Length: 340
Ligand code: GLY
Image 1 (cartoon, rainbow, N blue to C red):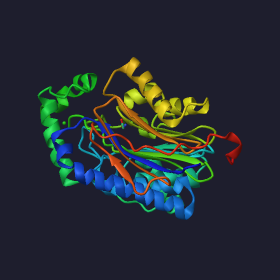
Image 2: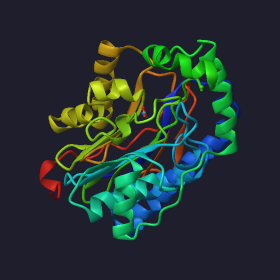
Image 3: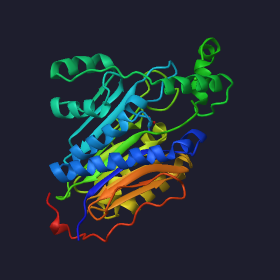
Image 4: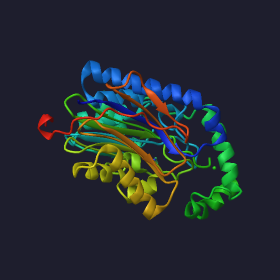
């Protein structure tokens, strides 16, 4: 038997009081994203279209840390990172961008319409968008995020945000005059495998709360936030970007799948490597392998994700630490069946 489908994530992190109060909303959106992605996969047959459509649902939701719901920099601004990649090694990425309501669509434009892979900053992106007719829309913070920003900057002022000790020393003077959210990581991402075993991965984020202006995280970095290779599979990461970059988490997952690990084993082994080197509470990752198997692993309290495969009757969301990913049918791993 073969299987195909999509896995979507809405970030890894801990169960905070605010995430607790929105569990059912988050599940609903994750289910919607996986369903929209799967529908696209079945109708258009492209794993790339599927991950883009799914990520757009999450970016538009205002609930996750991406698109309209992005977290804010130290200066209270939105600067988004996003990237996508196909199993043929086509890729596009953007960093520190605030000119697209759907950053994943701008990353796709980079892949489809330029010979480059990675653009950073609005200046060049605006010119690129003008030249290619990409519709620019400023990415403004929501009222909810502005409220969170005020609270977080108050906490940072008190020295209660432990995440950024070096940054804190750098900006202490700024903080005395102005005001910074403790860590939540609701980055969004998706991986998909189509019926011909072609894979794609994508990711989109506002980045970490209170990041310094100019900071780019793993989500824009091919190999760290995402990777895809038809000879292996596709992976999308979430969590502390600085840690994910250090171990090239998504490429590590794909390398393990390339040498024969199934998606689940590869996710677990890559997270073990990260945990051993950089500690718990650093990341989560989702993956599909070229045989149509899916996987997910985390060293955080929770990894919000949803799954929709042909072998399932409906999309299944997994958010709470006690919830387990759905079981998958046993798929054929006959290499001669694959259509490279
Ligand atoms: N993983 C998202 C970030 O660190 O920016």
